[in-house]
Amino acid sequence: MGSPMARRLVAAGQKVTVWNRTRKELDGAAVADSPAEAVAGAPIVISMLADPAAVAEVVEAAKPGLSAGTIWVEMSTIGPDAVAEVRAQLPDDVRLVDAPVLGTVGPATEGKLRVIAGGDAADVERVRDVLGVFGVVHHYGELGSGAKMKLAVMAGQLSVQVLLAENLAYVRRLGLSADDYFDLLDATLLGAAGERLRPVVEEGVPETRFKLALAAKDLTLATEGPGEVQTLAAAARDRYAQAAEAGHGEGDVTGIVPALLELP
Image 1 (spheres, one colour):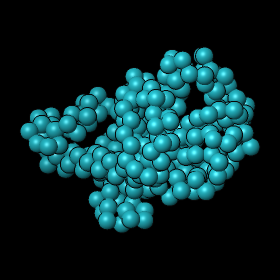
Image 2 (cartoon, one colour):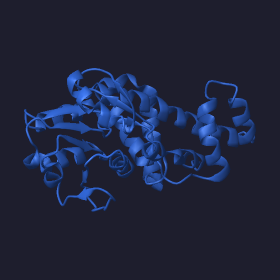
Image 3 (tube, helix red, strand yellow):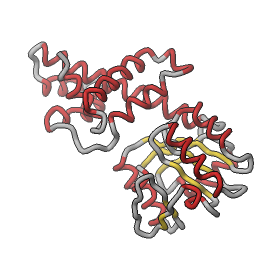
Image 4 (cartoon, rainbow, N blue to C red):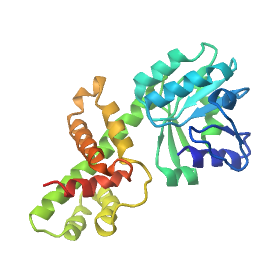
């Protein structure tokens, strides 16, 4: 996700410096050797990383290079507790906006992400034009609100995918046609989700747009703390964890379908 987002910033005429754990060159951008070098003198810092541990590590490494008044925009999906930890980790004179995104590599490349922001209204307005390069920006309230909203949406979306994957396994065991199942599903409120998964059954799992292992991580975050009411999401979390343990973790999230079809 970070690479296409950085390319969009370069294309928009922004001065961009990038850092990645595995060094990557990016046309039009400077490449830093460390997080501290990447953030040095930057009025806006954007992080897009895999999980809370990675974010905490990078924030700590970047701190020596941060300037007073910088706004750090944390765009990873890490949950509100981790956002609060980042706030505590950053210097008091550095501002923080949490702004995870809804969408995968395709929308990131096309600038069609939904940016789900939380934080002080003045801080969000300061970075709105930059975030607008990625897609449509929505501000949902105080710091952590973006992280909360992202998890709520992902818990629903990913749980529906598990539901349909289990339905498909049921259809197969009944000796019915998956094609007929999808045709009939079109007449229900699950039709759109069915159309997303239909190609997986007919053509196989596509190239990875969003790793299945990251879906398992998102559902783990969504079912912690106040998430104890998320009983369906917790069941879906366990299914994704099983799929990851079975070797599907690095593949696309839609790999949950063959993973569940393989179950005895």
